[in-house]
Image (cartoon, rainbow, N blue to C red):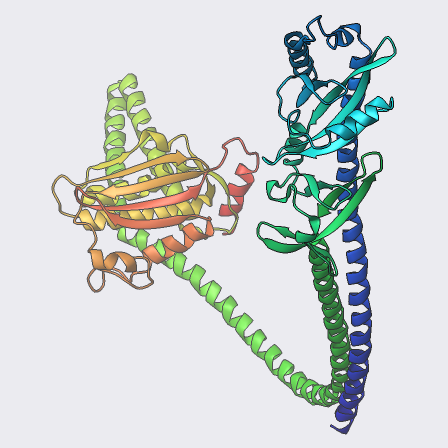
Length: 596
């Protein structure tokens, strides 16, 4: 016991040290996992937002470059220059100018196209949206007058926004007018609206000029933004953290912004912390289980040694006792073996006794069977002598033939009786069912006639069937069953016995039926029990059907007793079917009768 306590104390200290090491390592792993996950997630978010920023920068720059080249090209066309010529009364070609502006606006998809005189007078415009209220018009005309491309971001009181490009029109070296093209940002903002991220443009004053959120347009960015760990922007009525990626557009003096949602970063940190914690917990549990198993193994090993020593002592004592017991059991086994041998011999003698008893029951009928031929032989012999005296040689020959037939009949009956009375062997082989039934009926028919039973019918299917069994023992089964039927039918008018057989797959089913009184239902389960009989005292000892059941079981078959619906009893025997062409058939039959 002291050894077990020392081992437990040692392992307790080891577990405490292991817990401290596990806690420190787990904290380090969790912190590193969270940091690494944060960096990966942040890099991924920034990369995706940067890709969006680059694409939208190219889109916005492409749209502006398309319209930036349009005013200089228009100002150099002679048809445009001709629009600024006044007639003798000082009137301009405003109608032609308007049609031209509408055509150019329709083909270029610009928001508006306008023509101005150098003093700021409007010649014509396609839609007139910004031409009449443009506060930066003087600045656009002055820049065009200097021969440079004018540009300006414009907005209206109705929230309309555009970017205007201007170029001067000169005719014969004289500055005669200005062409201004107004850019339409509707398609740009419509494309931005498909993105889940906030995309917007701020000008040099910090005002949101373009945005995919209508509520942000033309509002100062200061009212939509709060500084913090992450920038916070007013989204859907609530300030939410966003990462702000900015791309400077120097020629326009604009900043293009893309806001990225940092929530994947927090989710990645949380997931990394959870996974690292679970991994650390799992590793700690595994280490604890391994340590606990080692502790149990050491304790069990010590305990096993102690138990082994005790068992050795117990085994020595038990071995001594078992040796004595084995000697006693050997003697008992020998006694039981001798008893089984005696029982087997007794059973064989009992079967033989039952056969002889059956022969005894048939003795009267068999005596009649012999007496009849003997009387006939004597009569034929006397007649033959008289015919000899008279010289009737032909009549003498006929009488001798009849005597010979009667002698052969008596010899066949004697041969069958001798075979039936022999002790059978235990060899089992293919045997002809029809021959065995014929031999059994040869013995049983005299007793049947004596009992007044004239009809013992044999079905046509019996003759062609072979079964696995012993010829003599199977004949004993048929004789016993037929004799039982004769006893039940004795003195009954119209009595008959029917024997039939059929093959069902690998089995042969044999039925022996009569039209007698049958068997009482409560007695059916007992008919195969030893010493059970329904006959009177002195008429039987009740072992016939028990012997039949044992013989059929030895053949690997079964036998059942039942009552027929039309009256009478029916015994059904189920045996293994055999092939009549098997060459071992004859040796098996010889072995069956060779045990005499």
